[in-house]
Length: 83
Image (cartoon, rainbow, N blue to C red; front, side, top):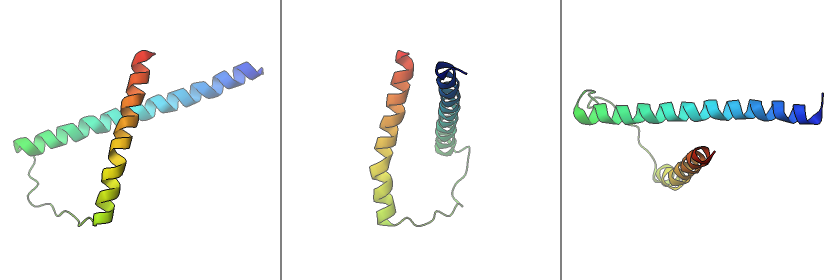
């Protein structure tokens, strides 16, 4: 097997995995948007749900990490649009 074929096979597998992961992320984002919409419009009643306490450290960590993750998703989407 040539080196070129081996590299091509490996990158194809990586591309498929990346594509599948991106699709799953998109589905989770759609689910999140739908859930928020349903809660806001009253289709889902969340009054009885107990929310666990979040420490100040956990909250700060989440706030610091979230924009970076969003930036990565935006950058990935932009790269795909350019391709």
